[in-house]
Image (cartoon, rainbow, N blue to C red; front, side, top):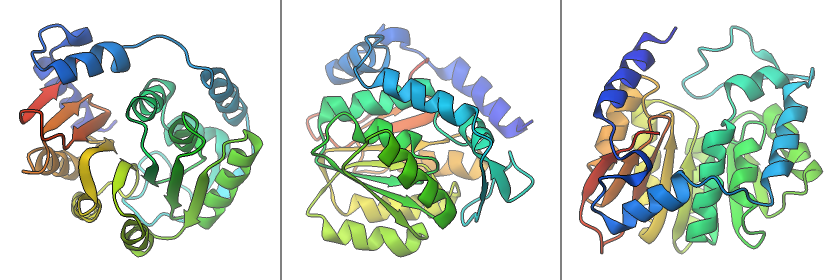
Length: 262
């Protein structure tokens, strides 16, 4: 058991408020929580994603992994079943659908994903708009190869899966873009690395940029990184959903941090 994660969840539970948006005085965040985060209306792509997930759940294929980040506390071997990766390392349905709704709502023209894994989260990012370009970086070439096949099979287009370490690949992608619209940070869950990737992407952030961080309370280091990020002067609105943190740079919004019960 991850005791730090358990304690973090208790802390989150007692601090969290605004269930379904009640009590929120920010119109922007109220609408976001009520109509997006707590939205239960299905989208056309969700049945395809559910079928894709079910297929991965029963797959007995194995991948020889190469971890460059913080490593995994869920696996003791570098040889891992696809079904186990889906269960322990891929984004779950609840938060994957939030990613989809965020992209559908804010309509980014480009997305960077740090950590492709099997491609589940990549699909949630890419499917709302086939004209959006998704750059997904995966440190393990074997995993990247599986993700490319999965994305092709599910007919998820507009995605470029790039194999390489984040610190080697990310600077080039950021430099090639005039501005960054959406970034999903889901890999290398270490304090200094997370802050470094945030600062790199911050260089191209603008008023409508959305950053989403996964596993923000996974460890003491990630907990500290999240606090440094949401208190950054450039960030105006931040939302803590325990598993993920969402930040905005909208200058028309007053700087506020919300811990939302979800």
